[in-house]
Structures are given as structure tokens and as C-alpha cells.
Length: 361
Ligand SMILES: *Cc1c(COP(=O)(O)O)cnc(C)c1O
Image (cartoon, rainbow, N blue to C red; front, side, top):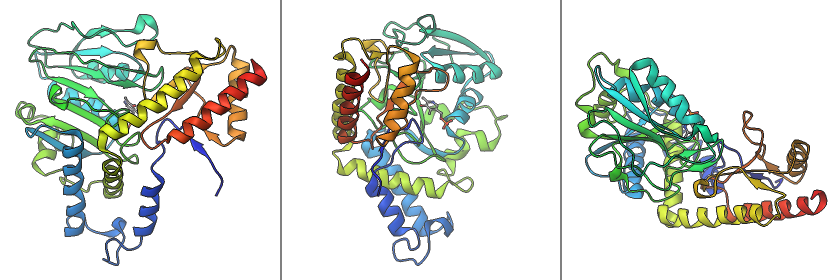
């Protein structure tokens, strides 16, 4: 098999042992003689997977008992709309923290539903840093505060979270859920598309505090209503069974690797390795994100000019590296180092970066 180093931004790399197990079980799941792709979502076999996956998330993330864990569809982008449709009731205001492209998109959807104010923003800084949210002040009657904990394009990540004093805190954790330990009791609603750290695309994990479900307006259609999904245990309609099954295997892989604590330790070493290579390049490589805002998931950098950026991508591809071209809007280089990317991949990238610098620096 050809060796490739997968630094894709999402869908991202999955653990090889998970893919092997999927292949192994694809035609015959647990001796049923059937594939997970062709069984009823109401069957005992599937119900076990569904319930176990929810339980694994509860354990790995230490989710408070007054929260529901939902499996929805439509990606994080559907949550940009669902959050305001469910929570931004008439006469209230939603406060958005803007730290990059994803949070701006979330805010634009909320704008279509109701009144939005910007609680903090680093737009003036081209989103190279996350805004300071320590002293964040929002009106006490705000419907919620929304933030995006990791932004994949500039490669920034919050280390601290606001304490909006009684106002519900909502977070898009699509690109860092399960990558580091986070005190989930600080949040009232968290959502994440699975395709970065938790599995394939097709399923969105939503964690929502029970008491938020009570205020959802009656006018919200069932399919977009958190309460309806919670009441049906995420079986209101056919769930994305294959995606949830793979999330189940990925969560067991995380558990085998020391849980989120073990995963975080590895992620930290990976990120440190790459940032050190950038910082020790004598200015040849320049990191895009401000140092205190650097993401542990998306390492963004560039060479002194666009020609060498392009050459870097071309040469890296010849050496088996995949996905190092930055986002099409930003035009830099980016290594996305989600959970399943190994330390050895980062060591290989470091070696390539050093040799590229020697040849073109
Ligand atoms: C990847 C990503 C998204 C987009 O998710 P979709 O599932 O494609 O809608 C949204 N927010 C963040 C923070 C992301 O990293």
C-alpha cells in the first residue's frame, strides 16, 4: 500500500484500525449475517450501537447528567440555523462571538431569525487571534451567547471560555470536540459535525441542557426541533446509522488511547512539534495565527512568497503528503492534525519542512 500522510481539513483521517474493523464487519455485523447498512434502525442490534455510542460520549466527555446527547443530520451548518430557530425567541437577543469564518456564518443564519448583537470580535485583526472573552459582558436577558471554539481557516482556538453569568453558552466545537478536555458543565448547548475528530460526515453530535428544551417555540418544525429529537432518543426518523456506527468505533479507539486526556497529550506534542518547526525556521516559515491563539488542530503557516507556497504543496504531494494547501479563501499552507493524525506523520512533515527550507530558503 502506498504511504500517504493525510493532513486533510475535513473529512479528516480516521484511525486505520477503525477502517479495518469497518471492512471486517461490513458484510456481517456481530454474526447477524447482515451489514449495518441494511438493518432496521429499530432493530435490537442497531439500538445497542446507538445507546452505546451515546453512553461512550457521556463517559469520554464527562457530560453532565442534565444534558441530552443527540445525533442529528445536516452538519454543523444546519446547527447554525437550528440554534436560533430553537433558542432565539421573539423579543430576545442573541450575542455572537466572532473569531473567524465559521462564527461569521453562524451569525449570518441567526440574523435571518432574530436580533443579533456582536459580543466580541477579532475581525479587525483578520481573525488572526481569538477575541478576549474573559470579561465578556452580555445583557442578562440575552437568549444565548454563541462561540466557535476552534476556527479551521486561520487556525485559531480559544483556551478560555466566557462566563456569561446565567446566559446560556452555546458552542460550535466541530473541529475540537474530543481533542482536549473541556469542562462541559460550562456549556448549555454544544454541537459538532463528526468529520473532524469523531468519525465520518453525516452525523452531528449535539449536547443540550434539558432546561433549554422547555422554551422552544411551538412553531419550530419537528425535524428542526431539539425537543422532538430528544423525546425520540434521536430516533425521530431514520438516523445516519453507518456514520453513528463508525463514531462508535472511533470513540472506543479514543478510550483505548487513554481517553480524551491521552488524546490531548498526543495532540499537544503534535502541535508543538509543527509550531516549533515554524518558529525555528529563521523566519522562512511564518505562522498565521497569533501565538496565544494558535490552534492545536489546524497549523497555518506560509513561506516568504506565493510561488514557494505553491512549490511546497507540489513537492509535498510528491512525497506522499495530502491536504497541506490552505483554505481556498486564505491562500496559505495548513496542516490539520486532528485526533487520528499520528505523531509519526507530524515528524515526517517536520523533516519535509526542514529539507524544503534547506533547498529553497
Ligand atoms: C468544519 C466546520 C464546520 C462545517 O461543518 P459542516 O458539517 O460541513 O456543516 C462548522 N464549524 C466548524 C467550527 C468547523 O470546523
